[in-house]
Image (cartoon, rainbow, N blue to C red):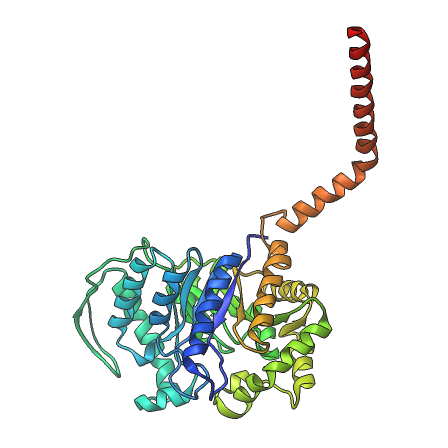
Amino acid sequence: MDRLRFGTFLAPFHPPGENPTLALQRDLELVEHLDRLGYDEAWIGEHHSAGTEIIASPEIFIAAAAERTRHIKLGTGVTSIAYHNPLWVAERMVLLDHLTRGRAMLGCGPGSLPTDSMMLGLTPTDTRELLEVDLDIIMRLLRGETVTEQTKTHNLVNARLHLRPYTQPCFEIAVAAVASPTGPRMAGRHGVGLLSIGATLTKDGFDALAHHWNVVEERAAHYGQTVSRRDWRLVGLMHIAETREQAYADVQFGIETWFRYFQKTAAFPQMAVEGGDAKEMIDFINEAGIGAIGTVDDARAQVQRLWDQSGGFGAMLLLGHEWANPQATKRSWELIAQHVMPHFQGGEVSHAQQTLGAKEYAMGKREDYAAAQLQAVATMTERYEKEKAGQA
């Protein structure tokens, strides 16, 4: 197994009515925490309505987070490009690429909340059609082309970038996918990455995982593009504690609020989560195979299940949520970094296998080597006694 990267997909989700300033600070602190723990990526969402996913500009958030972190890569997860002039999307990302010295990534999607697009007079069909048109323009601009094109929302006349990206030839780009083949089709056409957001969040999406990548490869072959599974990112659900009982107790803090958001507020049927109370919600996550609320063993098993179902991918992104209080949430991320990541990183022999193998080897030799140690002490003691006797 190649080194599997780990990160977060941070929408974020905060209960309406809370202090938004403090909620945003918690989001920044979480990214700092993940950077210290060695997580590879954080993808930040864009939303404009419904009062729960409260980051309106992932680019601004990334600029703030970049100044607080050292290693973690920061992506827009996703920029709803149908809402924007594609020229300015490209320009802002090139700026971020320079400001972060190559740690910025562009995630593209149509926008998930109809209450966002309706304020712009766009239907969900419009945003999906615009995604394809605008992504094509963005890719052409990033290749250095001059673009003249009229879209449903914008008129570009001899549009061009006045800066080249810091990352050569370009920063990473990924297209979002939930259940339909639209995202995989565009990823293959442009030879960019795939963000499977809904694929691990519903049973239907889980079953479609392998099909998603088949679509990417088929379209890439058709357009003469090269794609790699390393650029495929899966988004999943987890909360981990030292025991299952503790994990179940932890999520009583906020799991119902999260479920009710998708059940009652967000007009996003692709996230049709089920559960009437906290117990049913926990069972839904665990028994449908779409996530893990439990121990590090449960988390490792879930990652392996996704790997087997998909045929392999490049990054495991855990959906950022506040099912548990901030302390328990941070502890969950720590446990995953400490006990899950090493089993999927290190190459042909993982970091976990290497240290466990070293332990087993030492245990097998302990009796013989302990005897040798005792013999060495006895030999040196005898030598010293002889030395004293010779000096007398």
